[in-house]
Amino acid sequence: MKRYSAFAVAREGLRHHAGWERAWKSPAPKPSYDVIIVGAGGHGLATAYYLGKNFGITNVAVIEKGWLGGGNTGRNTTIIRSNYLQDPSAAIYEKARSLYEDLSQDLNYNVMFSPRGVMMLAQTHHEIRGYQRTAHANALQGVETEFIGPERVKELCPIIETRGPRYPVLGALWQPRGGTARHDAVAWGYARACSDMGMDIIQKCEVTGVTQEGGQVTGVETTKGHIGCTKLGIVVAGHSGVLADMAGFRLPIESVALQALVSEPIKPCMDVVVMANTVHGYMSQSDKGEMVIGGGADGYNNYTQRGSFHHIEETVRALIETFPIISRLKMLRMWGGIVDMTGDRSPIISPTPLGNTFINCGWGTGGFKAIPGSGWATAEMIARGTPGPLAAEFGLNRFREGRFIDESVAAGVAH
Image 1 (spheres, rainbow, N blue to C red):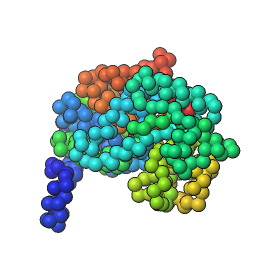
Image 2: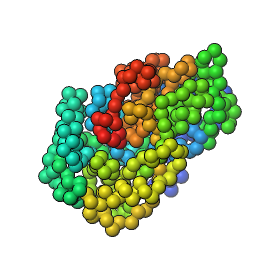
Image 3: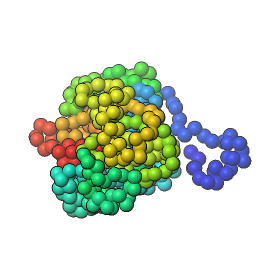
């Protein structure tokens, strides 16, 4: 694989850009692999990458029923933060955030990480108390956050209206080293690095069954034939329940659509990420100038990847009171992503009842920010056969034992 650099760009410019290689290969599947990862989104690709980088396991296939990064990885609002209340959550999200800082250099691919800072608005007195508690917890966890007042909020984001009649801004939980990254580039960078290590990324290859013998997985049936494996990783977000059913066990999750939209592009006016949990809306400005706006999840289970008017109307109406400047913008496009929700709004990174099969799911509405940490933890679990420190608390057995990691109560919303 050729390294990307300013010199490479200049050299290929002189050659009329005729010498660039494919970013990743598109091979036919081999009869068997040491590890099969089902799902070529961010989490699946990161898992494969850290299997190779950290453990030297490269006889790996990443299988995707559609196109690489075509699910939630390409359908989110790109927010990266780690200011969670519960210790296990803060640990894995902070690991992910710290890996994002050097990810472009690590992958030799510009993921456009932008540590512009993330603020979570306190618009009720209850939220003030909650965010102050989180700030104290983050200090103990080694996560850099602080609670700031409305004057500081206005200084960081001049377009915000802090004195709204229904949604006044009373303060915010501020994480200066949070930010955003380019979602597609994260998937492409991991895919390129995996392919360079000799892994096979197999697109348009839907899994239709899981073969097993004596309680152990032996491979998967796909639309491209049977593929054998020694270990199987299921990393398919909203379709985790479907794959688990094929493997013969059930998961405590439900799948719903989460919606977002972008406006027409405008001149730069906002260089931070703002989340408003009281009104369930969050907004940042992309490098192209679009206002990236996230809304709520549907109130019913579904597998659609489109938005619905009532959620968009509800989200935009509330955000306009906090950001009056956006009231006359036109919506450019809207979409939905299929997210998998657990009861405690925390993920599952766990062995399964089917031997040598492992699952990573349940990230709900907060999956993008966790990609590097999730891949790191899942790769360690697959390689060693048991969860490591980052994943230990996120096992399936916590639901049976009542050891919930309840971020829905802690944060008010699990974005």
